[in-house]
Image (cartoon, rainbow, N blue to C red):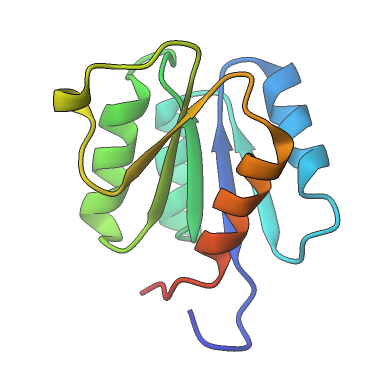
Length: 123
């Protein structure tokens, strides 16, 4: 992402309330905010515009959040990835560079994660 490019956020969760909460949390942050309710929908959105930061729920229809993040990272290796989940997955299945954000995640921790990714370079 160039210095003047706006970050792009992609939130993936089958629960519309979770998606609304994530969007509200960042309403004052510049950048594109897109919402998907499945891994397949998120992959299509990422093809149209690669995101800078993705937060995916662990449980999704069709594919799990880790599989989605792996597919997105295959396309954009420096993508900032967060896994939003109610239960901590085993450490050996969490790939390097994926941040686990336990639900309910304190808003300040979630914002810090999102904003740290907005400054990261993207290709």
